[in-house]
Image: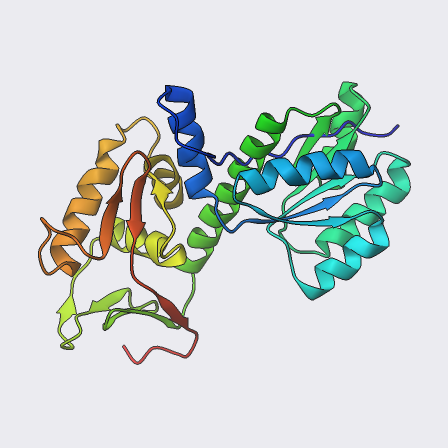
Length: 275
């Protein structure tokens, strides 16, 4: 039985408004800029509607009206999220889903006209991350995309923490992953606690992108029942170690209404660390 489709959720704010809802929407838009979404559906009116909405959310979109075209696009450039209507035949749809992911970790939101619980479960078992039934709520779709992107980025941070070699370079600083050792531009070692190290890696993974406190909690696995100001405390401690003047930070800046942004470029080298 064809599974029901789940909605993607990526919330990005459009234009600032004096209302609380408008401010929330703007914060979401800022956090999700440059996200690349592939829309797979043979319904031209539907794809146009989704594309226009996501572009208003400052997302980049690509449309494929056939699975074959979608696979061709994925081979050239891997999207951050795929929204796909595979609601014609579950067996072939499941195979297409596997091909789109190709063993990777690209989040896929399947959309369709079926609403039964069995449909939903079938698609989730086939590997979909979300299943959304049409007609879709555009707001819910963008919010789900947002959640999927954040989850993938958080997982990427955690995976990097397990890396045995390489280093991050930023503003003359070096962070060596094998030893978890931070070196000042002068060459002096700067000790980091486990929490400070994990937080710094989270920032480096998303340099120049606004990150919410909620995301930083997830990426650094700070327990959810701890008040989110614990993130602020960790940021304050990290600033004391890498900022010239922690009271006027130039590296880790406050993103008003969002959280924080690591405001300088960071480059990852995969060569083995000497330390």
